[in-house]
Image 1 (cartoon, rainbow, N blue to C red):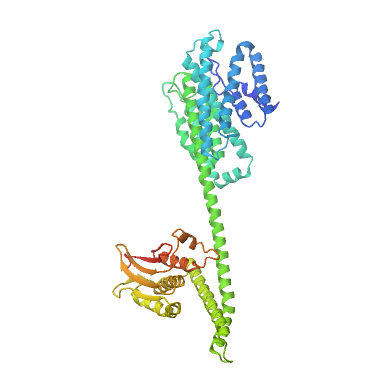
Image 2 (cartoon, rainbow, N blue to C red; image 1 turned 60 degrees about the vertical axis):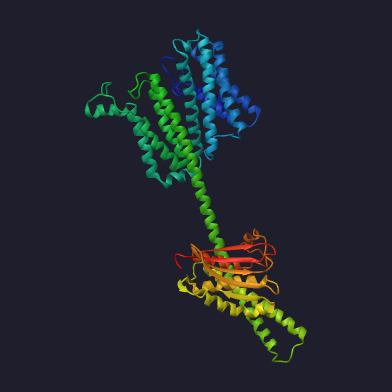
Length: 538
């Protein structure tokens, strides 16, 4: 019953105005009501009920206006087939309602309406011309009939679609909050639209007559401002999304259509039908632009919201991670210092000699504890660098001296492993870098190389000047690895004994220097790690 009531009301000429000469509706809203009813139907019973309500309303108006029911049946069938075909085509594409959340859906809706409505308008025009006895088609050529019928239906689809979007938007708190975020902007845009429409359709000229005593005549035409409303419609759609687009279209469409149908409007076209045609084309253009702009704006704002949400989540996780690492560093160092102190006492054999077996056990404990302490230091350094608390303090240094100090620190480990550790960095090579950062990077690179180089192997540190960078290279003859595994090393997965925090720390240090780290490796062929410092600084 509600659909019958809506269809019956929209047949009323005040709601769907008609051209005086042809009686073709300028904006045939009943067909748009049927279209949206079919689009949201969930069952065959809903579809059948919608069609019956539309047929009942049309028959009632045919009887009220005194037309022949038999002559109206073919047009009624076409009016049912047109929206049904559009709905079928849109549902094949997965569209079951009008929404501006997807630009592709908006484009599908627009192209479906424009294309299928044009075909059915052509069918209607051909049928009307073939039945010369029909009152509606007397004295009209097929092109005039087609354009009036086609644009009347298209205007109805877009206008009712805008109305439904506005109704849906006004029922949400988000829409009111959106307007509240820019009330002056919203008021200015709406006010400009209203003034432009009133000026263009002879309301303001009447006010001029009352104010200045001069009457608007055909000899002194006012310029048409209809097309100047398009920027305001676009801005409303961009700033206020769905609600702005629908309000902009309705403010432009509803008064303009009715005033043009009544004979008012821009005087730069003589015939009322021509004015209606131009206005209908403009309404279709502005609706299409507004819908697309609103949809794109919605997507941009949605992505911005998601980005802000992701940034907030990332900041919270970074704070949690920093808190965990600082707590971890503090809590782990205290017991480690106790373990290292007692292992040192046991190895010194102050309280008596150790058996070879127990000495081996204590050395393993001492070695593991020192490794854990070293890892804790790396974590602390990494946290400081990522938090931006690392004082870079760049200066020109000689890499050979830094590398030599690191080599001396690791010489004992290399000898115990039976690995030859060589410093081949030229004394003439200089680089602009942070000495502590370079020390950390080289130390971690050499530690990784020594861990994976078997007895009898060789680890070499060298340096050279490339066209754009100064390169410090650490090469080993170890087991190597698959190059794709390099990415996995930066994820710091539990159980990845080859990676630890070393590579991540090196990469962070190089990023602070605006440099980079590269790794070349192959299974069984060793690994080469290169530190690239910008030559512009060096």
